[in-house]
Length: 314
Image (cartoon, rainbow, N blue to C red):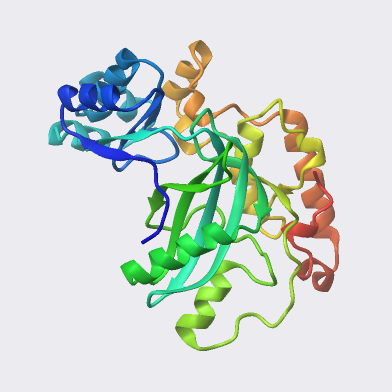
């Protein structure tokens, strides 16, 4: 279909992986099917690293991890995953050196309605989900989104991840998510993707009240405050706080639900779990609460027209 993708192959055994590494230059990307947020992705610089990643990602959930997920994270599905004993499918992919970009797409009956494209400025860890984004226009990404929607006859939302190669500027598709991603609420070119899909599916216009677009750089809340990046000055970047939903804001200021139990807090006192980031700094929490109080004190007509994109808090 004319879409650039890195070379890739399904890996069914250690022998498959050894042959792949021999045929392609390092580093290599090893990915597990059904993972999310970078939890099933490893970048390997040596054959031994690749083998270790393959064994880790393809193996059924070991008993010690199942027990930890159940007791610490209070995950009710952990034991079911353990007893199921199913190996995950794993693939190897060529590593493309470049900048990570992502898009979320709204489509209806195979027609791309709109895309929101963003360059990833900061992530949760080395290969995790985005925390700070810069909105961009990229015709190559739009074309891939159009081809994908048409070829698969899609209706709804999906996400595409790309690497823009440093040396050539070419845009390589590296992953697809058949679901909504983090960008669905962001307004660009006069509307968000939810509104675009609603209008196409219902043959009705979306909300008549015009709302301003988000700014070019967005720090996602609360992720950007949990995964601090020394290379991103959050004091100069608007944080996407949903000021109109104070109860939601208060909930998101707390630790994630999986980290609030007694066992989880005991674990956190002896070791840090990088997958969940850190607790939000008390200074930030007080700043956000003060802004919430100011916002709630405004007249209703002013409050209803005030959006995340306009918020003075940074």
